[in-house]
Length: 122
Image (cartoon, rainbow, N blue to C red; front, side, top):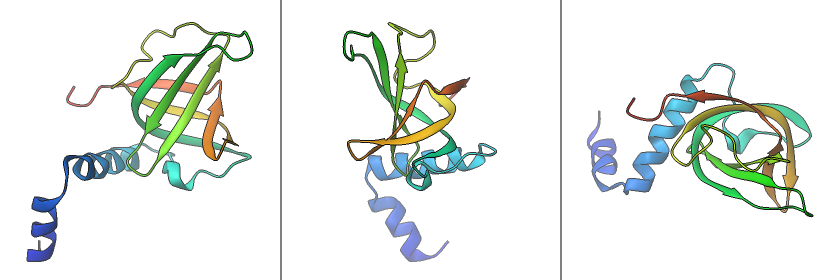
């Protein structure tokens, strides 16, 4: 390790170090694509940490919405017709798959297939 990379590691913010850890964890997930490389109108698979989960009605339909962070970007996940989903909570690691859309300039997957993964540190 060179002096420059050692110095960069020392001066990096907590957010930058967390992003590096998440990119590395997502890269180890077989078949996953970094969020910033997911293409709208194509099926995609990603892995990351849920940074937020909220219940938000859309046009009178209950909806669980979550943000998946993988160190490269944020992917919005939307489950229509649900009030809650067991295991879907902030801090949880997930692997998701589905059709990637762009909604208001953000990558989004509606009703994704998902697999719960061990929490960081487990």
